[in-house]
Image 1 (cartoon, rainbow, N blue to C red):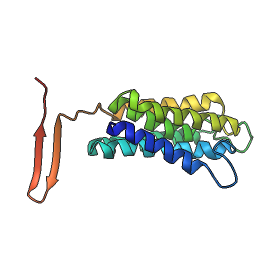
Image 2: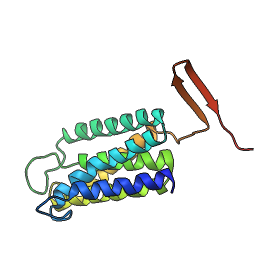
Image 3: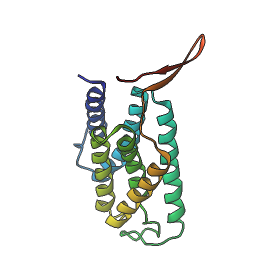
Amino acid sequence: MSKRRTFAILSVGATLTLSNTANAGPFTDINKLGDLMMAMAPAYALGMTVMEKDWIGTLQLAGSITAAQVATEGIKMLEIEQRPNGSDWKSFPSGHSAGAFSAAMFVHKRYGWRPAIIPYAMSVITGWSRVHARAHYWHDVLGGAAVSALFTWLLVGKYDNRVTVAADGDGLKLGFRTVF
């Protein structure tokens, strides 16, 4: 079994385990499930960078998520729209969705669409839970995803494992790999 498939299975198992409490199944409290998925999507993306020993990707992930969250919070300060539940005027865009979709889009752009299926599913669940909780409208979720797409496009590059850099006790080593 490939490293990626093993990692994906372990991630899904951990997500389902963490979302299940003693008194309720994983889908009883949709709001908590959405919060969990919002946290698990970046954890999945971080796990991908660690599994690939892609330290540049780790920095790009941190940068793209941070930039998307800062931009999202900045837009919220404009108080464009009241939340459906009436609690405040910080509905647009969804910060939960921005965080989750940043991770999914990072995995997609950096490693391809196949390993991004799981974090995209987590992102959709996150967005749906925010609408279900009446914390956001659907366009708020799409706005969060759009902010994430912008910063992923600007800050993330495709993974190229043909050049590797490694440090050990003797110093820094640079490796090249190509296919003829």
